[in-house]
Length: 111
Image 1: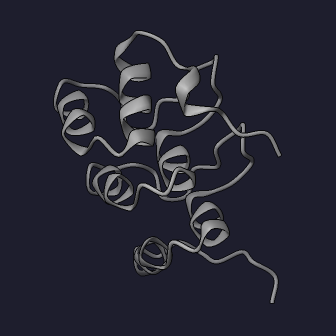
Image 2: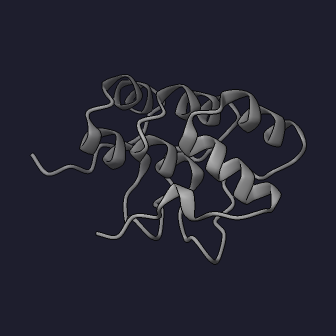
């Protein structure tokens, strides 16, 4: 599966937020959200959700912030082909897995 390289982004509010999320820059992500950047926007160039990218980059605090700010906990990221739950499971981010399940996200993983 192909994953977006977080360092491949350039200027632009959404792109800046995406990079900040991948880098774990909580304050910059918060700044962009406070200034109207859509938490669920999928850029045509990247085809990745910020939430899934942050999870795959190991940024648990950013994932929590994005969920706090209304990120869709079920949105499948087109590039990675994963939901936030699948991404969190893949990298062993148990806190985010537990939070997503607690939010009512349906576990579609085969038994």
